[in-house]
Length: 260
View 1 (cartoon, one colour):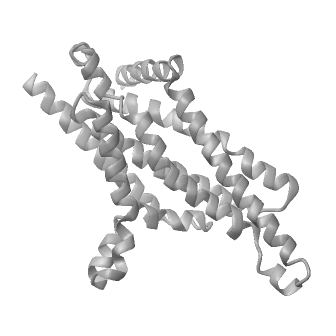
View 2 (tube, rainbow, N blue to C red; view 1 turned 90 degrees about the vertical axis):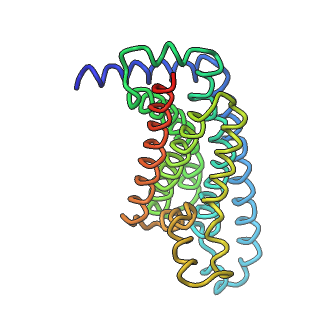
């Protein structure tokens, strides 16, 4: 057990070193923070404008809340932004190994497929968690000058972490299929977009099919977290999503071992 943990940690440290010894992590984090800051600035600006407009109407002022006007829309925007950013983080995880010819060396080492997959997965997840933690400055600013509800902020971040973990697992799977990083990134984006928007066609189909589509929509399961509610059903969905795509990636690597 300890030997397996050391192997996975060695791969994790190797992958994490690549992220932070190259421009990859810095570029992805910078782009994410700039766009997230833009969303936060605009939402807060519109909230301030609306506050000034309702100052003369106390009844309307009671209906203007910071959580519904800034916090929840911010988390919703960040959830969509992850779809654009995370493929840049995951597309090279295994595809680059094949392109550079280091996959053969890696797979001939005394490590299992799961050692490789989990080591790379948790390295990418660490970069993402770092990126997400840097956005904590936004709720900190709100807490400095206002009184936002802490519940929706905490659950919103939990939902973003689970959503990102699901996208990273999916990106790792597509990166394991071939040696073209661009193809892996585009496939991750396309599949993620499908899972993100699949619930939107609910009004156009039968109620039974609409229920099924809602169940597989990652955005539908994220909504409760943004509203300050932790539903175990949603958490289990994301956990199952991660396990499913990591399992598929393991099967791809196993197939490559047999063919190689």
